[in-house]
Length: 99
Figure (spheres, one colour):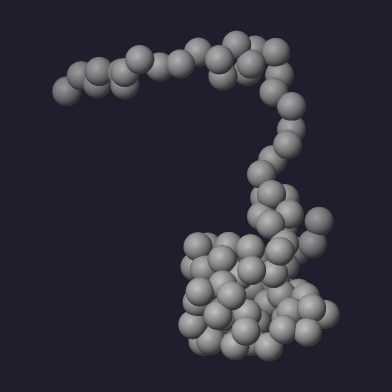
């Protein structure tokens, strides 16, 4: 595990997205059009300035890399007692008493 700061991760992610875009021979404008985002969103993301999660998802979908999104979901198996709790569905929220 690396000790990168959030800012360093933004720069790294931007670099990887730029690399992927160039490997696919797509201009920034073409990517923006395909992702239905502004050109500035693509430029900011590739420059490491960040963007919203929703806009990043649009870009990853346009680059056909939804597997990157799926990597964010933990795939750890549930333990047997967690499975029992997971299968119970709540009927309503608990009633909190005012003090």
